[in-house]
Amino acid sequence: MTFKDLGIIHPILKAIEAEGYTTPTPIQEQAIPILLKRKDLLGCAQTGTGKTAAFAIPILQHMSLNRQAEKGKRKIHALVVTPTRELAIQIGESFNTYGKFTGLKSTVIFGGVKQGAQTTALNRGIDILVATPGRLLDLIDQGYISLNDIQYSVLDEADQMLDMGFIHDIKKIIAKLPTKRQSLFFSATMPQDIVKLSRQILGDPEKITIKPEQTTAEKVEQTLYYVSKKSKPKLLEHLLKEVSYESTLVFSRTKHGADKIVKGLDRAGIKAAAIHGNKSQNARQRALGDFKDGKLKVLVATDIAARGIDVSGLELVVNYDLPNVPETYVHRIGRTGRAAASGIALSFCNNEEKPYLKDIQKLIGQRIDVIDEHPFPDDGTEDTPSENKKQQRPPRRGPKPSSSAKSGEEKTFKKKRRSFPPRNR
Image 1 (cartoon, one colour):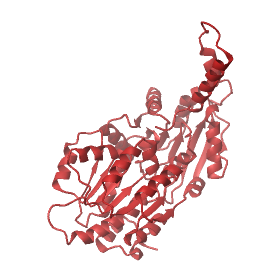
Image 2 (cartoon, one colour):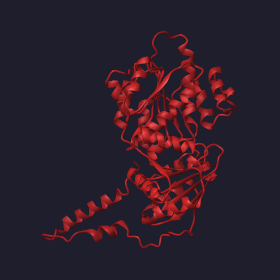
Image 3 (cartoon, rainbow, N blue to C red):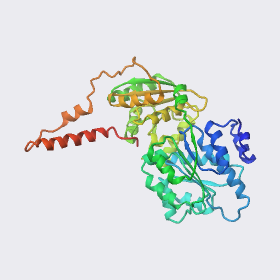
Image 4 (cartoon, rainbow, N blue to C red):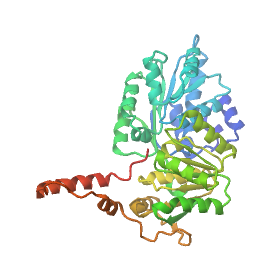
């Protein structure tokens, strides 16, 4: 099947062909016909499957045909809400690319920057708005945005929005939308809280599930290094000096960890940059731009910031920290296994991360090959967190607690231990 077979109008088809695309991805092939019939859609698909085009193309087609009959200042008829600035920018670029011959105007708004340029674009009038939740609600409160004329709404990367604490913002946005609209809901995973949220947004939706996990895992060469936590920096430096990849994406579980990795690489003479939520928008875009242009060979990112990274020809992914959500591992390695491309993914695993490794291997249905021959093998001498805790505990002063009090103290300690290491940020 080709895009021409999907019934796409000439202006959009011309833009698609100009980009060199002729064959739709599975989600595009399934979603576009449904959306052209103006039905609601619940889609389960990870980043990198082509879902942005799957919802952007039908929205552009509907609006292009309706725009011909509409006069006066442009009103916002389509809203796409997404969790991160990078992903919002990427979606905005897709709308501009596929809609460049339609005459439709779109803009992107997000926090972390001054709002002047964004409000100027809004005041001029736009047809399509791509936004992060916080900045959207802020500009609605200031009177710059009205959602009264929305005909098409998209909630993208819903699972990540819930992980980032946007649930209350999402509910506020939904309450401001007109009842009569076409609604699209996309999430990489479908836990119960996501299903519950989708029911609040969608009427009687069509459902699509794209499962690229197995194909992604199969076409990416995966290897595993058992290494102690303290030796991870040395192993990363060693590997980056030994291999000659032009582009390497390193995943850290935390923002602080990402900065620490970059500082260590800089000391080793390896130029790198980090992107995460604490970096300014200019710093993030500069680092990402340099990485895409080949000026920077190593980029260190947290999972949330990496949702907007789409680098063609990415050669190597390094899981410096194993994720505690197995689906996240698949999303990470999928960065280097896009479309028909293959790639390489290296993962570091210390003693604390072995339960995560077990869950990952269960999800992908295969055991990851272990590399035993490396200069920094885990010799098993690294203290476990419980041992460290015991050694660092100061001498008890005062009366000895009762057995019931001691039992409560132990329960509290065990409860705290289960929450470590921290969830993805």
